[in-house]
Length: 305
Image (cartoon, rainbow, N blue to C red; front, side, top):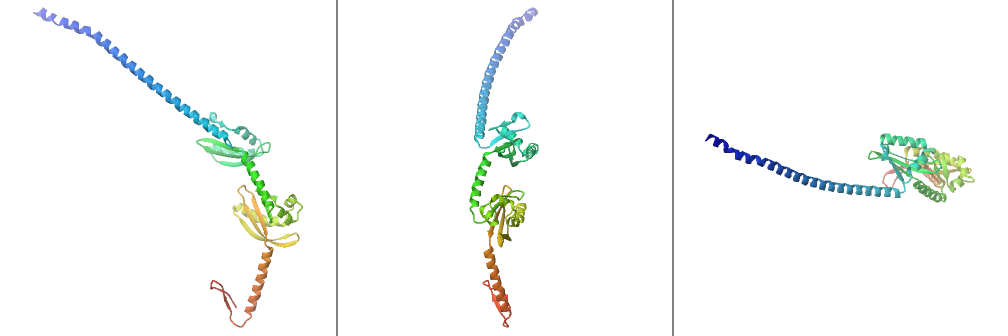
């Protein structure tokens, strides 16, 4: 009995032992299939990611190209730079134009403005001459952690054209008109100014330091320092005659001061004559023994003897 009992489990044990390789083989196949499926899925996801990245890059390149085309088509020449020199971008020959300005008479002023822009992001706007004498408007400001410059020659030419037209218009005005620069020196006068001071031409009128010019200088100084329009009445010797002039000094955005003179001698004389009549009338009423009171249109007492 005992041997039989001991032998009974042997077939079962033998049978169970033969299933182990099968289970291992099945697991390996399943793992291989899962790995293959994962690899296929990962490959598909990677392909989709690559396609998406290509599309993003294409759109970014298109946007950059469009931006560059727009900047290049503009009138102003643009220069952008940062701490990383690889970030420097130049459009429309801006670097060459900036170098020309830095070689001109305003190099020190422009260099200081560029240093302030790069160090503290301080914005600026100024006019700088190139070594060839061209005037360039230069604007600078910080943009997104970068320094950006806009350089424009055509704007100055347009301003010069407008200025020439304005000078032509002011030259035919019947009253004296003139311009002073930032140092308050005369830079331009119209024909009426030349005739008023008795000069042969504009250059002579500017250089002769006439009484009209001297009378207005104080007003121009106040207008420039306070940045407000200043008016005043002055008596000026004009061609040997004492004339009453209403003078106006107007500060301009570019730092110049516009001067205008209007001869008000006739009105001033009329006022003086009227005042003489009023004084004589008052003197007569004051000599009367009868009380006299005069009320104005506002019912207020304006005179009594």
